[in-house]
Image (cartoon, rainbow, N blue to C red):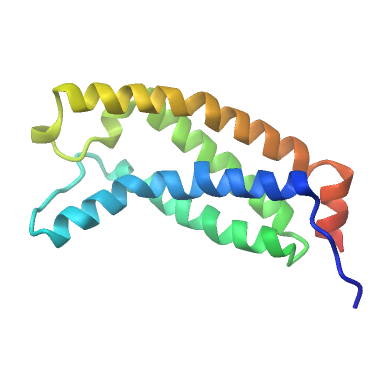
Length: 147
């Protein structure tokens, strides 16, 4: 069996996608888990709070498959999951009230910090999305996935 080489640009695209669309959406959910382990009870205000972490787990799993390059259809599946994750994260950045934990925790300077952080991450997520879609559709990446 001939060894396949992953292009550097594809490696960067997969790692950036892992960070921006896989790990980052898990942070609020991990925050809730850590607070529950300390004995505090927190519940999200809206059920849509759990959508970004669920998509984040799916993106992480698909990043592992994309890193390996197998199965061959992982390229298309990876792009579809990236699109859905980008849409959900973009909606969450534009509507941060959907991501509040509980109404008692909202307000104050912490909300303004999270709002500013979310607005700063949005351009980075757009750049990572555009770069990943562009690079995965280039010939070296297609050749890697097609084997």
